[in-house]
Image 1 (cartoon, rainbow, N blue to C red):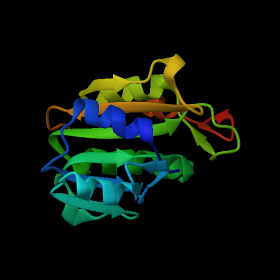
Image 2: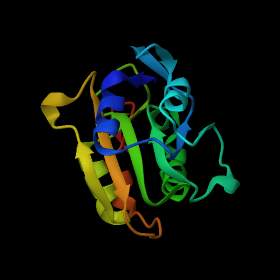
Image 3: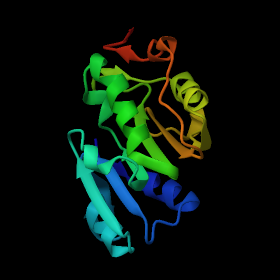
Image 4: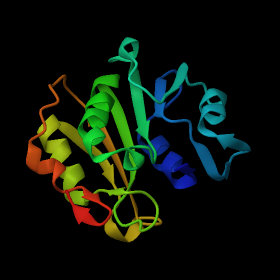
Amino acid sequence: MGCFNRTIVVLESFVDLRGLRVLELGQQEFMPSWKGHTNCKEYYKSIGVQEYASIYAEPTDYIGLFEVVTNLGETEHASVESQEPLFRLIHHLCRTGGYMLHDSPVSCENHAPISYSRLFFFELAYACHYDIVYMDPPENMVYGHLLTLYRKNRESTFNVPDYIWKSITYDGKTI
């Protein structure tokens, strides 16, 4: 999808990224450029992020290594069957005390096959014992996207009940 400038503004409002390890699902470009940078990797390096990585597959050697894990428009392009494994991966990549940032569509027609609901992100937080640090109020959502920042305050298993996945829609139909 790419990274909206407001996404970085919200993240930096709650998290000092200097010296942290940041992992992105995919490698995101800014829309438009941000402080002279065209992609997140350049920007993170310029502000002193200790380590940056981006992934497109499951890296077992990264489990629990990152203080910040971002999903800025990747999971909605994956299959229905991949949703649970992708969110499980995000959970395991983030270390205890770290943050997970999701910028995900809730009403993006013609963008991607998967859309999420606010309820999905509330229920995910409850099931995984995340603190919701920030969630867009409905009037602040940009282009039908919901920005949600979680904090993983304790190590917990990723045990998400099946009913939570049913609040996701695929091509406009609840799965």
